[in-house]
Length: 395
Ligand SMILES: Cc1ncc(COP(=O)(O)O)c(C=O)c1O
Image 1: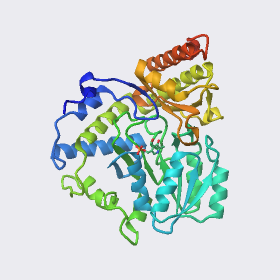
Image 2: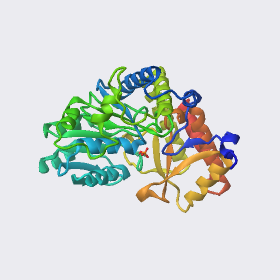
Image 3: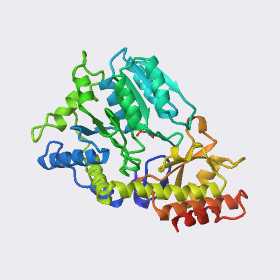
């Protein structure tokens, strides 16, 4: 078998879907560094630094802050396997695909799931949280901070955290799409445990799931009557590998090169500065929104302040074969745009401006290409409508 042509062509696609996002060269370079042993003292230093930087990005002091081996869903499964016992009552906010995934996971691990079903594209209010927790004494409460299937940005995390704690439950949050692209304040917001993914706003290839658990969550984990129901994701055992100083206890072989690239990705994030990074995401989102609306798109999320800066879920103008247009853009212009997920399949696009994919140049190129393709198909008369609207925001 010959070497796959993708490696030889050095094919570069601009990633503007729901993840993965563009990866900086520094991160790709770190990833291709010769592999060290997973117990090598040099590698252990890299692990320690990765944990320190991950704490800064999560804005937490939690000791148990590590990357789980696996994509974002592995972080979800880690929290479920370690923090939920059979018959625990778990309240789950279901306003998109990922709340549904968590509910499914939790029920597979024996939880009694109490879903709060909301309109897709909306978020939960503190009043609704108060109401459902008032009716259901639960051990765990879960919501998604950045719902990638709808583009909804959950607000009031701090207020909701307080309500959850008044009811003596653990507050679990999915930060897969938000981490590195907007504020995620684990300690200040009272989040007991959170998970994320590398391939979104961290701009690191898919393959790791940063997680963070506070002492309250660790106490529940240690006080469980039975062992975690997953051997691979048993945090009690994994902890002995990640927090043993130079004396690490083998659990599973760490994905060494993946940890190099997370390490380098986190370094770049902290070099840029969290505040500057979030402002970059916000500004580019404002410009993209102006451009998309000028081209005739409309947002799934109605309230502007509840829209994510890194993921724009938008309905297309009427009568368009969305998949065909996306394919044309991918083949002729090397830009990937995401299709709608779940209820929005065939009706909406998901346009990502995550991490390294969120720049003024990329926003302008994207709007330019979409404008050209729309003009070619007679959807608009003026190909530059979107571009000009975005440029007005940048000015
Ligand atoms: C909000 C959210 N949670 C969880 C996941 C699952 O992550 P992964 O696909 O990396 O397993 C995703 C992936 O898109 C996501 O967007």
